[in-house]
Length: 266
Image 1 (cartoon, rainbow, N blue to C red):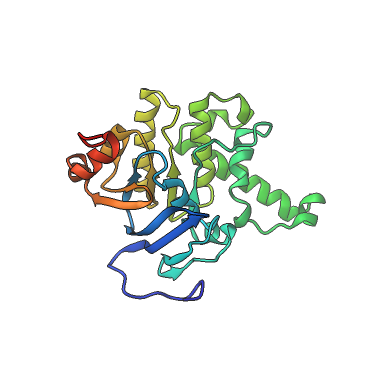
Image 2 (cartoon, rainbow, N blue to C red; image 1 turned 120 degrees about the vertical axis):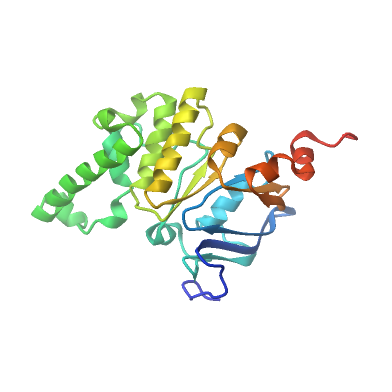
């Protein structure tokens, strides 16, 4: 099916659907025939040991890589083959495992970067400081501060991003993703490097984001956070799905326990 074509046969409320997606690099299959759905309003976690294919899966969902086979639908449309900026404009935003900020720009300016696809002023308009450019810049600053308020950074708007503690830099990256006004937010290891207090605060923010009408998927190693916030959990191992269910079901699944801890023989 061509990118952008309307898809059919989805369960009610499906926002994102991956069907049998596979991606190999040379002789290594990083993602193998993975299928899953994310419904509107979900908080869904994707977990698995290191090397399970989680970040590659995100790269496929956001257009960084194209799957070798399979299909990805968002809002009922096939998005395979679309470039990342088109997928972002459709309503998928993500954060990265490694913080990717502009350290010499202010906190507010970093958030404003996430709004570029929502503006109308072109290069010439901005360079000449024409009225449209000035109005948009004022609107963007106001919108950026409102977005920073969601993650508790509204007082740091004029600080340099590089001066923030690591935990706040993670929250800033989350705010920048929210500035794109996504329907679906993909979080890649959002609790990595955070202390226990910051992780609890992150869980509260994830709930807040969901209550704003944004569906959330998180790849995460912190099982305390996963079990607290997620309603469904998908487990990958060596690029394949080995389990999917509620946190309670996943916690006691022997295949999941073996993937993380090894079998008795191992």
